[in-house]
Every structure is written in C-alpha cells, then in structure tokens.
Amino acid sequence: QVQLVESGGGSVQTGGSLRLSCEVSGNKYNNYCVGWFRQAPGKEREGVAAIDSRSSTTYGDFVKGRFAISHDNAKNIAYLQMNNLQPEDTARYYCAADVGRGIFCYTRLPPRPVDFEYWGQGTQVAVSS
Image: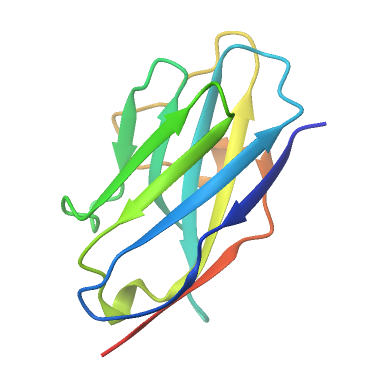
C-alpha cells in the first residue's frame, strides 16, 4: 500500500518561502507521478505541480515561476519549493501519487486530482499580508 506523508507547512508573511516535503513509501514500481495539490476553504482542489520518474514536470497556471517541484529518488521524497508566497496561496497542500508500470505525468496540462490514486493528509500553509 502506497503511503504519503507531507511536512513543511507553516505560517509566513507575504513574499516569504516554504519548502514542502512528501515522503512516499510502499511504491514497488519504478514508474510514478507525484503531484502537489491545494485546497482553500470553499474552493475546489487545484493542481499545483507534478513530477514523474523521468523528472518531467508540469505546473498550475497560477504558479508563474514561483514554485518548483523536485524529487530525490534515493530517499523517495518529493519537494515543493514555494517562493514569493502571497495571501492567495493560503490553503491546505496535499501530496498525491499515481504508480505502476508505464505511469508518467501528463505534462501538457496542470495536474488533475482525478488522475491520482494515493493521497496524503495534507499540510497547512498560511500566508499573511
């Protein structure tokens, strides 16, 4: 069973930075796509970024170069570096994974929640003005 545990959330002021981590365990496949999503109260869950085992990436349109996703395959950890954070980035951030033979991220569009099977519990990010 694939399990994901997020960490690194917190409270920052506008313009600040945070790095989120997602530790993935139980994946017995070499292929995967790991994504970050966020959900603010009263809003739909939206795709932030995703990265696959080939290191191909995709981002949500609102990221605009402020965030960067990366991974450390040896440690089975995916990271989301978030810079120049704004109050509208306040949300609960979730890590998700899709694993299996031949699984890669679809990089022509931002990540979609429906494409991911496994989810973490999330970590809260709050940005104050």
